[in-house]
Image (cartoon, rainbow, N blue to C red):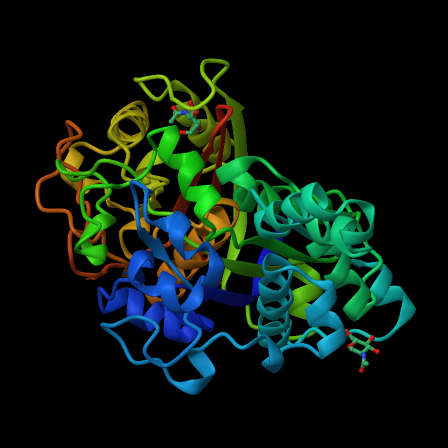
Length: 444
Ligand SMILES: *[C@@H]1O[C@H](CO)[C@@H](O)[C@H](O)[C@H]1NC(C)=O
Ligand SMILES: *[C@@H]1O[C@H](CO)[C@@H](O)[C@H](O)[C@H]1NC(C)=O
């Protein structure tokens, strides 16, 4: 089987634009969560009244100006400005999640040093990038305009701007990539499925290089109303936004909606070696499963999560005890975090596992950046890869009192130096879809 490695990274998150700034702030325990209620009057314009009744008013927002986050100062190149990345035509044609995807791709391709021009190489380069929700903003606005003004009010760009796969399409058009062009949309598992599926395209010989990841931008009152009604959101810390992301903590009560994008450049191992590319890590395993249980709640014992992790390790040919770090899906919901911890416990203390719970290192970076939904699996994979490349484990913020029935090393509050050769990233989505990815350092 052809082996797949990672040769480029790109990221846009509430911790800023760029991979380095993300990693630096993440290890420094910075929080990207802010109050959307405070911002709404100036920035949300006519929608500001709609934020008022919402149960959760915290969010992870990509910084758009220096003081976007009251606790940080962003430098100019850490701030999102669409004009830095595309011209006016493209800005009009692309919804925000697609714009983020384009920018993260540009960063990742540059990092990988992959700018093919020959027909053969363009044919062998593909894109696999999805979104969970996509462009809710235009669906909402257009619905209102259509209701009030009829046919003449609907933009010819409406359909291209709401299709989830259009981000992948725009990336292909911009660079001329004619390999497989695909977009997963599996709620919060989107990013993980995109990376896993892309790695299969390379392994099976459909492509030599794949742009893979996820993008999301649905900071809109309707999103918060919807997730609010499904009782998924953090509501107890609206007054203290950084405290609202608290995976595994006794006071957790829901997740924080965030936006952003992350892109990995996946490449066939020999292809990467032949061109002397820098290799971050290998995609060594991918496993998927379904719970066949409930629309939004996991099985309490985390059976679906366990199956996904087991399949990913089997695929990788790696034993549980060899896993040095798990980047948990843990979003901060009562049931979800506990189910995942139970699943990790069964996996890591079972056959070929470790001897005691304290040897299991697990953190959830959602404490710092919130839940990027369709981009979550992609950014969390990126962080897992950096954990391998830099031998550092990012922290779980706000974890004062774990109450998920385990004594794992949850990396509370502060990052840890640790030799990481194998990292696993979990993603679970509404509908009961679960995926795990295993990354490992390349053996010399
Ligand atoms: C805008 O950029 C795109 C490349 O993404 C290019 O095809 C197009 O011609 C540019 N449009 C203008 C008006 O410069
Ligand atoms: C798999 O993902 C989703 C989201 O948490 C959930 O509905 C499903 O049941 C998960 N399984 C777990 C966590 O065991």
